[in-house]
Length: 157
Image (cartoon, rainbow, N blue to C red):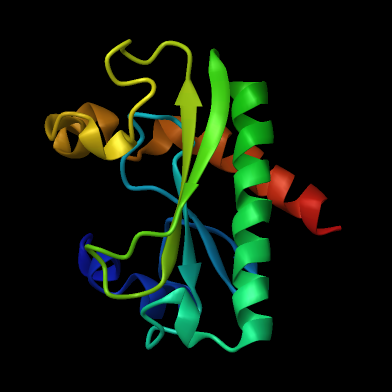
């Protein structure tokens, strides 16, 4: 059942059944994104499926989640700088418009992106980037997954 964990990303992470999870962190799970048209795209998932927004967390957990977001962002930056060409920067976002649980997006940005998109939010990329098989997370992303995981470990020490 390939899509099962996608229907319950947080619950499947808590059960150890979410294959996108890279590491368990203090206040959530670092996961690699389903789409990789910007290689290294990652997501920080809350570890409480009932939490819908950052403001619902007690202050200490809120700060832990934001600290985990910073850690994942830096790990993606370090890994992409090492493994990918043309790395430029990382964008961090907490949106919550489409998914009902608290999560944060970590988007690496690259010098090779199309000129008309490189300075815009990733959400303005053409819809086919989000669904074409060639951009789907797959075995070819193993080196990048490993690099992000290594950086998460280094930053957690």
